[in-house]
Structures are given as structure tokens and as C-alpha cells.
Image 1 (cartoon, rainbow, N blue to C red):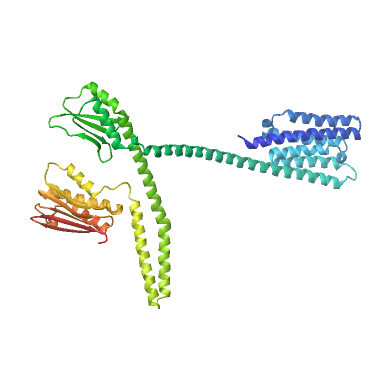
Image 2: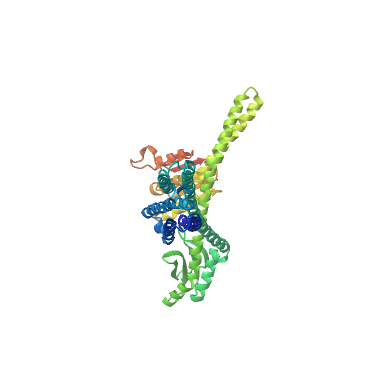
Length: 501
């Protein structure tokens, strides 16, 4: 919407009314004053022709620069000619001569309005100068009036243009706000439905798995079966029925949504499943596949929300609480210096300072925990992954670790890496029959002992190009952990300690 053009069109209609009104006044007064002399008819004809011309001229065409300048010149020439024909400074058409100046200022602004005012004032002055003893006071008043009209309506033109620009910007902002509000309302409705569905049985993977097995049993009688949900770390069994006999046929049915595999169903049967039964199973298990896809989508949304909230909390702690605590610590330091002569008060202030310092360190550690990307697996998961991935069945791994709570995120990845390196070295190089992992892991602290009954080694005899021990020490230094190694011909023991004990 071109708001400025709309205002100009409205003003053009007002100006045309003024043209006709001042023309009518001029015609009435000129015939009243002069009568039916030819010069009266000439003045009326000139002004009337000009009014008719601008009335039929389209507004968009009239606003073009060349045509607008031509119309200004014609208006000034015709009105001032009528003024010269009907008495100069006493002419009834002087009021009419103001309208072209007003029109030029409204449409073209200051420059066009002042140009029209100067032209009209110049013509009027040239008409008055040849007269003996002209009325200079009236001439100056009319010249000033022309200029005032040009300035006033030129300023009005500027205000209208500015208002049009502001209105356009406001309209665009309003449209954007309305569009954003619609998007937010749509998102709110979807999230509301999602929250309601999250509590429904259709999004409980265990219930979905049991329902899938009941549906499969109708089509294929099985001795045993299980349903698995896909995950980043591998399939997770969510439902199980029966025990598979020694000699049974195994059938795998993948649960897919589009190209994505979201889970699987494994059936153990007495006889081989026919093609028709497989097709029936695929059709019957489609609802389970869709339900698993919804579960995975919900998990993805939850992970994204948790990640954003962790980032926000870390930012708030770092930007707001951290500096405030640091300022408090500085104030306590200053207070301690001012009251060092009062031992009791100074001791209390020092205790407070120590508490604030400890709190600052806790905030920094918490920020580091919150900034850790993704989820760090537990030590139990790490060790089990190593066991599953090793070739053969030797050595045996005895896992006696009491993992009360996973280590804090900012150090858990390094601890996991240290344990992984030690266990893999024992499996690959120690020629051990048994590896024992024991100890205790808590959020703030822990101690892990990894012992094997292998051949042992000397740290100074490690072949070049092997940097496992160096990496272990570097990681331990970074998280302020203590790593001790004791290796003899009867085996090797690593002891890892960290945190407050």
C-alpha cells in the first residue's frame, strides 16, 4: 500500500475544491467590480481553462517532474495574467493566484512550492512596477503571503511523507508480529498436543512392544520373541516373551518408517515363517513402527530442549552469578583489610571469603558441566562396549565397580577415556586371563582400580609410537586426578583417584 500517494490524492481533491471555490469568488467579484468588460471575460476564461485542465489531469501524471513544473508555470502565468487584466493589487483573482503555490508545495514539497511562490511574486512585482506610486505595503504582504503558503504546505508535505514512511514500517512490523503470533499459536497448539500424547500409552515403548508381540502371536505362533527400539548406542530390548528352544527358526522383522529403521521384532518359531505370514506381520506391526518413530522423535525434542536449557543456565551462571560472587569476594577482601586490627571480625570475614571463593569454584565447575555437549555414557556402559567389541572370549572381565552416580560431566569423558585405554591395553598386550575392575564412582569423587594377571611391563620399555600412557597422564592432569601404576611379572594394577576425598 502506497500511503504517501493516498495522502497526496486526498490533498489533490481538496486543492481542486479550493481552485473551484476561489475561481467562483473571483468570477463573482470581477463582474461585480468591472462588469462585462472584455478583460473580465479574458481573466475568467484563462483561470477557468486552467482549473478544468488540472481537474482532468490524472494525479499520477501530474506528479511527474516535467509535467508538474509545466503545470506550475501555467498556473502562475494564467493566474497572474488574470490579476494583471483585473486591477493588479486590487484584483479579485489574487486569492486564486495563491492556489497554484499551495498545490505545488503539497505535491512537490519545499522546492516546488518556493519555485511557484517566487515565480508568482516575480510576475506580480513586474505588473506593479510600471504603475506610478504603487502600494508597496500591499505588494510586500502578498509576496510574503506567497512565501508563507509555500513554506507551510511544503512542511506539511514533508510531515505527510514521514508519516507515510512510518505507517508503512508500522504496517510491515504489524504484519510480521501477526505472522509470528500465528506461528507461536500453532507451535503452542502442537506442543500442547505433544504434551498430552507424551503421557499416552502409544508413546510408552514397553506397552507398544508388548502390544506388538500380542499382534504377532495371532499371525505366527512363536516360542519366544523380543521387541527392540533403535537408539544411538544400539537396539534396546523393550519387551520379551518366552524362552527360545535350542533348535528353532529365527525371523527378524524390521520396523521402518520411510527409510528409517526405528526398531525390530525377533521371533523364535518351531518352523520357518512363510512369505504370506511375513507380509501379514509387516502390516500388523506398522502401528508399532509409527509409535516407535514417535518415541524417538519425542526423545529428540526432549534432548534439544535439555541442551538449550543447559546452555541458558550456563550463560546465566557465567554472566550474572559468577561476576556477582567475584564482586562480593573483592568487597570481603577490602573489609578484611580495613578491620585487620580486630582479630575476631577479621577471622569471620576470612571465613566468609573462603566460602565465597569455594562457591565461585563450584559455579565455574557447574558451568563447565553444563557446557559439555551431548550425553556422556556411564563407566558401566563404556566397559560393556569394550567387552562386546573384543575378539574371542579371553581375558575374562570382572566388573565390581559401585557406580553410585556418574562422574560430573566436565570430567566424566576423561575418566572414561582413561579407563578405556587401560582396559584395552590389558586386553591387547598383557596376555592376561582375568581383568578386574573395582572401586567406587560418585558425582564429586571416585577411585577405580583396574588389575590384570598378565605379564606386566616397564614404562620405560614402551616401544616408540605408543602414547597410551602419555595420554592417560595428560588426561589425569587436566582433571586433577591421581593415576598410579604398579606393574610386575605377575600383573599390572592401575589406581585412578579424583575429587574430594
